[in-house]
Image (cartoon, rainbow, N blue to C red; front, side, top):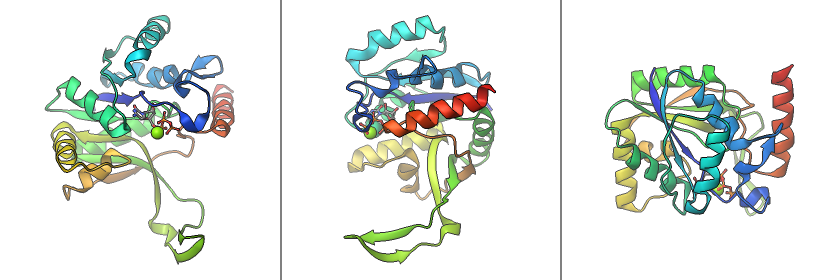
Length: 228
Ligand code: CTP
Ligand code: MG
């Protein structure tokens, strides 16, 4: 299924404590941002990439795209203070009213092409589909370090990106959130508010988001395993 992808890359990576955008850190010698871009560059169904960037990082990123032969980036709008705003800036810039839009964290470089295929197919059929994995640990709701409830693990999924939507649905959800001043931690939350069913597609546990220093070790191990 053909799609365009929006990659928010305008964060500061505070939890990584790298002193700069964590997406410039390298895994096996290649920037995290390029690892992620490569996945979409190589997917024949990916028609265009829209990258939200910090304006002061635009030139560095442009040079990186050139050096690593990334050709599908059609625009690099300025990101916002929140991830949700960065994604919205890309969707506005892409100006797509039909077709599928995928939203994917630039900080998740290990997304499997097979998951993208499953996800886009499901979003094409239903309008909204997101990637997730079943929770592994026992999950409890805790307030002030005291357990309030043990949740039924069978019903719990850890949600990732990509999240894929029919363009009309995503745009409507973003417009409504903007109007209401609603801030969500992912795009699915915005769509849920419209009472539209969002389908969850099983992804892989290695689709980790590079968030803290430990994730870099995991990232190196994943790449090593894949290169064997
Ligand atoms: N992002 C963005 N615009 C923001 C915040 C985040 O485009 N205002 C992007 C990040 O670059 C990243 C993705 O959204 O690719 C997921 O966000 P996260 O992992 O939280 O990255 P950061 O916000 O950079 O990290 P931190 O929260 O630790 O500062
Ligand atoms: Mg963040």
